[in-house]
Amino acid sequence: SAYTFTYVSFGELAGWLVGWNLTLGYAVSAAAVSRSWAVYTSNFFHGWLQHLNGSDSGGSEDSATTRIAATIDNILIWSVNAKLPTMFNGQQPYECCPLAAVVILLCTSILVTGAKESARFNTVMTILNLAVLGFVVVAGWTTGSVRHDNLFTPSFFPEGLDGVARAAGLVFFSYLGFDMVSCLSEEVIDPERNMPIGIVGSLVASTFVYFTVSLTVVGMLPIKLLGDDIPVVNALLANACCTYEEQLEDIDNLDSDHQYQCLSYSSCEPPLGNNSSFTFSLLLVGSRVVSIGAIFGLTTATFACLMGQPRIFFSMAQDGLLFKIYGRINPKTGVPTAGTVLTGIMTAFVACFIDLESLANTISLGTLQVFSFVNAGVIVLRMTPPLTSIATEMEDNVDGDRGVNEKSYEEVKAEPNIFDEQSGLLISSGKRRSSRYSATDAKSTRRHSHMLPDDGGFVLVERASREFRSSYLSTVVNGDGSTAKSGSHIRLLEQNGNKPYWLTLVITILAVLSSMGFSRRWPIWIWITTLGFLFVSIIALSRLSKGSPPDTFSCPWVPAVPLLGILCNSFMMGSMPLSTWSAISAWLLVGVCFYFSYGIHNSALRKTTIMS
Image 1 (cartoon, helix red, strand yellow):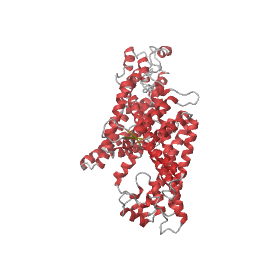
Image 2 (cartoon, one colour; image 1 turned 30 degrees about the vertical axis):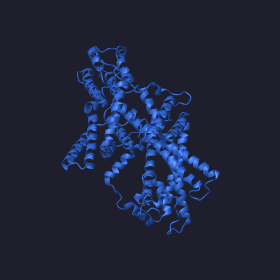
Image 3 (cartoon, helix red, strand yellow; image 1 turned 90 degrees about the vertical axis):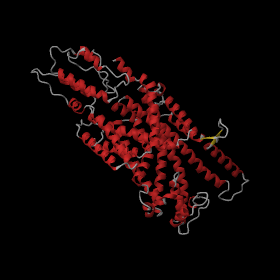
Image 4 (spheres, helix red, strand yellow; image 1 turned 120 degrees about the horizontal axis):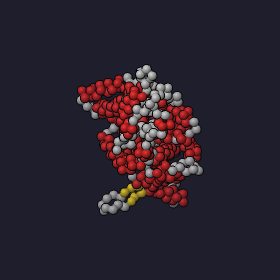
């Protein structure tokens, strides 16, 4: 996951903050989506039940069917807007949403059955969702509902590029689904081959589907009639009930209740200009089918978020940063059952009692920060070699030139370690060293910050570069007194040091400031100066040496591709309002407090450091 990737690239604190932001993206967004699911489901059945109790068809109000339909309708309304009494007189009753908690608990019950069962359920929901979206595209284009006037009136970008950036940033949290795929890597057969195929393939397919559906829906209806909640349903319903001219007239003659007649099932009749009853029936019935499909789509989104969150917690618990109960695996199902159940209960509680609609921007900003870390990590890992690889090269180089004063292999192997094989951090190893590597040097290499077990990641690389340079030049000497040729990883570390860390940080900050200057109309000289420094930083990063890519799947064209990712993410982050930045800052502050009050004291990396 992005948490593990950042942990290895930047160190423990950065990894924890990314995991903390993923909690905002997974658990909190699952609660928000489940609320949308509850409202959408309630509205859908409300319209259907209205038809049953005779409000649309003129049936008898005294029939048993009518009474049952009315009772169910009242229960659904209560389940979405249940009133709770407040402690203070004069205040409005507090509204909660029990139906949102119900769907969270149902998804959790499926997740604890096992990975295969969860995958089957998710596959079925995804197929149904894709079938509905395919129907929308086919219906929109075959019935002639997509019009050039809707796409380019008043313009294709009515809110400008700044509006596009804000909208893209708002929906960016939906990309967490691709991180969820990586969270399941330990449960995938041949992950080196299948994970890249799954992530890249789903990314390409999702982009194509999103582009096609969006273009179709926006072209079917004037933007004012699309609405904010159910634009796909509105696009089909309005074209079934009204011609294009009637739609424009409906916009100009909005009634006192602020309801458009073209979007009402009760007043829907075949438009005068539409001679095809088949087209009318296709679009009208299709709008109801799409309503059901939207329920499937929201169910899939809720399920995916709940599937990924316990696995993030599992990784954090394995590293000692979270409570140990989240790191327990059920031997029968292979699922972190305790973590899944606890996550489901907490998410259900939040979904029921807290309205999270206002957190949409905050969730998206946290997700943008996560993927910016991932892009920066690609650059860092390509330009900063693993420390274990450097140690291996040192061992190979000294293997043929051991001096008479050099310790034996068994003596050196028994010395305190310097590298950790799993994390690649400078904390433990059994590599051979020269006799010139004194006890004083050994103490210095084990000296770590009291604040961070790994010295914050990039600080560690600077120390490693200094120590390896001095120890290598003092130990690896040929018989004629000349220094042996250093390996590629050592040369890369000596040339780059911690420059990739600092440059990616500077580039990200400057890109965000440039975006803020563009969206907030800063003075032109400030904006140009920021862009100038950004351009110089990109050139400096591009001139750094790069290591060889791994034999398995790797990002192409580094650093160009990850830099484009950072610039795009920064552009969307800079367009976010200041209130969103304040909210995410408060969220990260809570995460930092938790880390320094619990995580750092139980860190597995810290314990390994102390033991070594």
